[in-house]
Length: 426
Image (cartoon, rainbow, N blue to C red; front, side, top):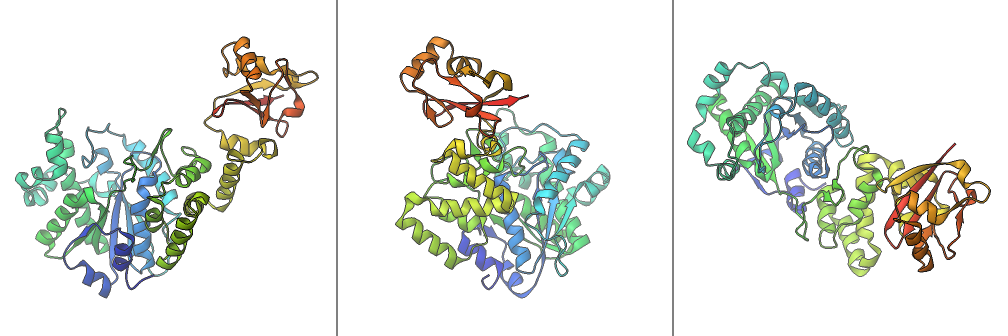
C-alpha cells in the first residue's frame, strides 16, 4: 500500500471530499472510523461495496473500523437520495436484516484482528432507549431548522409532490447523535460515507465540537455511476445483491464480466485491492486486446471470490463457458441449473423420455416455448428449435432419455435466446 490510506484513496479516485485537517491526522495517527449501513434488506448490494472496501482499506492501513448498522435509524429512513419516503420496517425485520449484513461484512473486515479489530455495532442499542425529552434537550438544541432545511436532500424532497415527513426530517439529528455516541464510547473521530451523506456527516462533526469541544472529521466517497448513463448495480433482472440466494454467484460474476470497457479499469481501482502497477498492467493488456475482456474477467474473478468464495467463483466461470461457446451436453446438471436459474422451467416424469421418448414439438408446447404443435413444427422446419446443442431438423423428432444431461435435465431453445429448462423426476 502507498504511504497512507488517503494517498491510496486519491489515486483510486475515491476521495470526493473531506474535512480540513484530516490528511494530517491520518498521516500521524491511527484512528477509529465508521460507516453506516442501512438494514432495509437482509443483504447488501453491489452499491455497498464501495463503503465496505473503504472500511477495509482503512483497516489495512492500521485504523480501526466500525460498521454501524442502523437498527434504530433504519426504523426511520434516510431521505438522502430518495424521492419518496420508504416503508417503515418492524424491529424484528431490522434485527434479522442486521444478522445477514454481518455475515457479508465478515468477508471483507477482520473482526478478530489482534491490533485493530473491526466492530459491527447496532445503533438500536442507544436510539431505542433514549427519551424524546432528553434527546431534544441535549441534542436538538444544537441544530437550527434553517440549517437543516438548507441541506440538498431536504430541499429536493420539500419541492416534491409528496414532501418530507417530520420522521425523515429528524434523520440527520439521529445520525449526528450516532457519531457523538461512537465518539464517546469508542473514541471514533472519522465518519465516512457516500457524497450524498456530506450534510449528515458534517452535522455530526459540528455536534461533537459543540458538546465535547473535540475535533471530529468526515470523508465522503463518490457516488458510483456508469459511463453508459445507467444506474450502477441494476440489471434487467433487478438489483445485484451480495446474497447468493438473491443473486446467484453466476449472475454476480456475469454482472462484473459485462462491465463497459470505459468503466472496467475504474472498477478495478474502486472494488479490488490490486495496486497501481498491477492495474496498469491489466489496463495495458486490455487496451491491446479488448475483445478478450481480460480486465472484466479479472474484475469478475476477484469480486466473486471475495463475496462468494473461490469454489463458487470457479463454478460461475465454468457456467459462463457453458453459456458462451461451450457444449451444454458437456456440462453438469448443477451447472445447467446455475446458468439458467432465471429461465422458465417445468418438471416431467422420467418415463415419458424412455423408449421412443416424447415428440420435441409436444415438449415445446408443454413448456410454453411454442403456442401450438403447428408453430413448433414450423420452428423445426426453419431450423429454429434446439434440444441442448442440437438443432432439430425433423418434425417428428423425439427427445429421449439419452438426450438428458446427467440423466436429469434437457434445455430447449427457440432461436438464439428463448429457452426452457426441462427437469426430470422419478
